[in-house]
Length: 464
Ligand SMILES: *[C@@H]1O[C@H](CO)[C@@H](O)[C@H](O)[C@H]1NC(C)=O
Ligand SMILES: *[C@@H]1O[C@H](CO)[C@@H](O)[C@H](O)[C@H]1NC(C)=O
Ligand SMILES: *[C@@H]1O[C@H](CO)[C@@H](O)[C@H](O)[C@H]1NC(C)=O
Ligand SMILES: *[C@@H]1O[C@H](CO)[C@@H](O)[C@H](O)[C@H]1NC(C)=O
Ligand SMILES: *[C@@H]1O[C@H](CO)[C@@H](O)[C@H](O)[C@H]1NC(C)=O
Ligand SMILES: *[C@@H]1O[C@H](CO)[C@@H](O)[C@H](O)[C@H]1NC(C)=O
Ligand SMILES: *[C@@H]1O[C@H](CO)[C@@H](O)[C@H](O)[C@H]1NC(C)=O
Ligand SMILES: *[C@@H]1O[C@H](CO)[C@@H](O)[C@H](O)[C@H]1NC(C)=O
Image (tube, protein in one colour):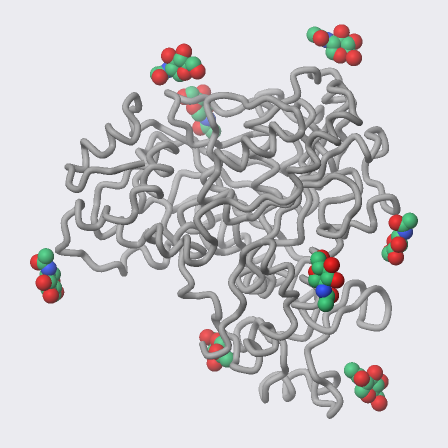
């Protein structure tokens, strides 16, 4: 797109989106999750969630959802039918509050607020940003692409100080390259040849904290198999897996399982596994680890998120606090495990070893699968959706529906939405947060360079 140099804000908005009234009334949503690690943590988390909910109800008009991991909500048939439809929209510039199936219990409040960019800022930083003396035209320079996405999603950006908090496109492309990365597009034909249209499914997979829930909601809102009707949808849903027009919120072998569990593990038996084209989300491992620090789900390791995390190499604090395991002289990294303790169940040498193993399993899988980047669902949402949907042989639902506020972007007790995710993950500023030099060097050495290359993520900079 060739953009003229100077324009007023109004004319920009018209140019970017000629037919839209950008101040529609919309619904927002937030989500929290209760972890299941140590009971004291659960206790703290529980009160955190309560406080968070009370806080949210007080400060904003948002939908509040409690969303258990792995879609442990009620089955669609148990819900009021009003929750099975997208919320009503005033016009086509859609902020989606998608009340689809299997999202847990939904508590919602109506709002008629207009959506300004600052409505999405994390509450704690709302009052701290400085007023700028720059004009809106100055600040727009280099941010046109992101403004265009926000405008398309019905979010008004009319204040230069707020706008400055958005990353410049150049910062985004420095981190992730200019184009989305999608692996496995060469398999679309073979999947479609093998599975007839009425039997096809797309299903979401990905590591914990890689945006699988958000993408599942978005997929169900934006893509459909025309040959799948409602009757079939209900038939193929259960309390863990929801199916909307052939779009599964997770693969029948569970979205967080590694690829070699495909034929080992089943949470939905009515859909043959080879009828499902998995859409697997991957995420920059450095930012991913930060989210794991906030909530690791079933992945455990000795760490204190307030002191040192991600912690790949134990530092003095770790050795003191977790002496039993980390103070031994033969310990060279912080081990990660799943299950009750490190000696039962699977374990890995470190969090980056675990990330490697997870994605190696899907990259090396011999059956058709698509791998997409979480970051591309933020910065190239329509293109990614189109590629994924058409690869499976589905058709796009128009107009495109944005999921702007959904907590699985990041995690609890923070306001998580498309805007904060763009702000955080659109720049490299926080990428090494709380890592020591040793941790960074270790991640540089251990992260599988083939994976970083195919996904076009930057290797950790040793001198950061
Ligand atoms: C919304 O889109 C539909 C078609 O998708 C169109 O018929 C309708 O006029 C649009 N409404 C507005 C308010 O733009
Ligand atoms: C939301 O708004 C609709 C229509 O204005 C109203 O019927 C409904 O009761 C409201 N719901 C809540 C939870 O306020
Ligand atoms: C904005 O203010 C800063 C100092 O606060 C000053 O250096 C800069 O020149 C100002 N810019 C404009 C365009 O006035
Ligand atoms: C939906 O699919 C079911 C099962 O294949 C079929 O019996 C039914 O007639 C279909 N309904 C429509 C409206 O196509
Ligand atoms: C079953 O799962 C285990 C790991 O739990 C894996 O090593 C094995 O290869 C899997 N078997 C098949 C047939 O996929
Ligand atoms: C370190 O030594 C202990 C006790 O000798 C042993 O149980 C443990 O497996 C060793 N750890 C590693 C990482 O080699
Ligand atoms: C790195 O990942 C690739 C792709 O999954 C895999 O084939 C390769 O074995 C991995 N390299 C190492 C050293 O494990
Ligand atoms: C990590 O963050 C905590 C809390 O902000 C701080 O006390 C600690 O020094 C940090 N550690 C590193 C290695 O940055």
